Length: 314
Image 1 (cartoon, one colour):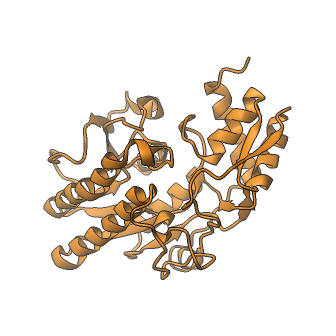
Image 2 (cartoon, helix red, strand yellow):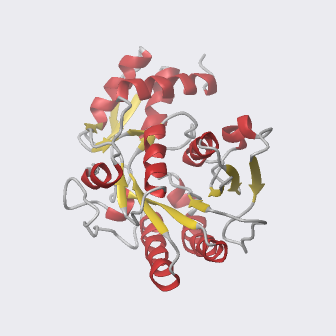
């Protein structure tokens, strides 16, 4: 039975990845120090003999008993609210954590998967973003701790690939949503849904014309699986190319939740916040045969149902 290690395994995406790997018949070790992850996300696997949770900081010396076939490195705070509050941890987990995970992959002869991000493109000057676009990143801005950390993670991953012949896969994740997102995530989906369910004003920053393209979590994980099982090194964009403005998005959530909330506008929070974000997934379609399947309506309904169980509505 193949064995996989998932760093950040108790996180939003890490836990969905654990679900998929177990469903595919793998033995799974989920590792997390829980600074943004939550054991509630993996509680349904804790009595599964094929699943093990290890509470650990992946930036420390990394050792796993026995054989290991796959390492999925997902550990990292990834929300904009984490950038000013956890900047050192973000830099360390993507620099030291990636280094330690690659060293483990090298010693075990395991295939290594790096969860990188569309943030490597920064505030893009080309639209939509292809994998060949080199990015427009402010290294000294508040977001730089995440953007640059992920760019470094990609660089060291390729160094291990070229110098040590470690088989690697690099995915660039675009905006993703779904059950198990943190309520205090600070991102648009939990913000809007939380506000709509509580009947609070839905806050749109700026004029609401900035765009995002939202991919449902299980679609994204399917892309992870197809990439890891392919012969492609990447980087490969995985995301949903259907682009929507923040204002459209707020209206959609208001409609589905049947909320009395009014939509209000506030000034933009950060200067480096990307105005547009849309993946070019030509490569994923061509070489992986992957594209998203779940509609925004269906995905939002599932996500809203999840948040209803977490939010205390008066």
